[in-house]
Length: 584
Image (cartoon, rainbow, N blue to C red; front, side):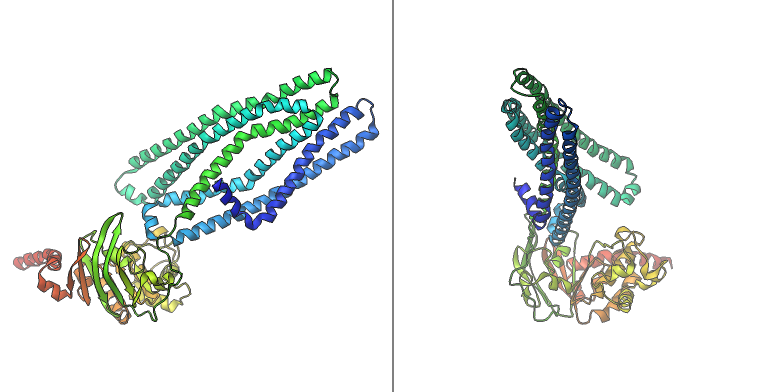
């Protein structure tokens, strides 16, 4: 009922249209309920006396009821369809906006295919309920109740006789709903799992082909698909048990009506016209009974879908902006980590991290894979919250700042380069959609992207494939660097952003960035010594702690972790150079 109440709440902006639709459907129902009365008069008053004068107005009344029913049905169906489409639009838009506001941790634990399944199949399930389900429930309920009332006035004995099966049908319907809802919930879950596997396989099809895993992936898909088939067959089995039983009980109403009605007719307690009219009401009672299984089926599917959608809507963001959030007096790029500890999944990833980055400085972060480098820089934009300590940008704790202004002053080149299926121009100016072309070209020049862009079929207007398909890894990284540079950030974060770029191009990028980075703070995460050796401060992480800090030369003099990194990177070169010298 909570789900139904929430769905009803979503229809409040359209309550007048819904009320009008229900009124129109009431006219449809009344036209059905009045028709047997006219039929009775025709049988009792027209046929025995062959009174054609009376037949014409009675037929005109029936025709009028038919026209009212047709017009009301048409207007109601159009109106409810529009309402359902509008509610679906509101639901989809609201859910999408909410997904945009959810923190990284949500996407760490929820698969994209599952989310896509919710945004498509589940929303369509809710729309079907709003478009046809509500009116179906209303129509059948009012038909059933109305027919019983009208039947009571015609023959209370028949009404009582037909009500014998009502409790049995109600009990069967309750059991049916109890069994079918979990079945539909399992089907929706498996649908989401199947969509996830499909999405991941298609996105990673190049990897699949590279490792000749087509047969394996097909087998895995078949297993998931077979599980979905089994779940659907289980729902069908439940349906096949309860639906025929409900059909049988509802169908018994006709022989009961004929038996009781025949006895009353023979005993002179009912005329033939009333018996014919009663037959019309019997069908208005039988049809809702027969439709009950379908109604339960539709409502159960819609409620199951709505549960998943509302779960996403109720998934609160752990990263919340305070009511009294503020902005620094000026965004200069000063960053301070004050005894910061960060945990994820109950495990400490960073422990007691403290350092200061002054405006204009370059801070390099190095360490082994999994040492917490990317996590550290993600705390600057408050994409995660710290467990202890504080991260301050320009003197204000990021937890006390307005999120959008804070993040709009960050230029972030992420470790995993993502480009949209759009033109190169729009990918570069993603953070500044209104940036003029000279600025776009300047950012591309800084990132050393100009050369390959100008050789593209349509230059800057070339549309790249999904996730940047069609570009090499180095080309995608250069577009990502241009995208970050274009927004003119106070703080630039480059997370392993030149790993796919050759060393010559990396050197040219570094030279171009010198002028760009003069007055802004830069964080560089890299494995190449050449990328970090000119940094004002190098932080070496080990086990989530700062094991070493200093300049390139200071860390070499310590002959610690950083020194061994340098040795490891240049050992092969020294050996190669030595062999060449010996050969000479």
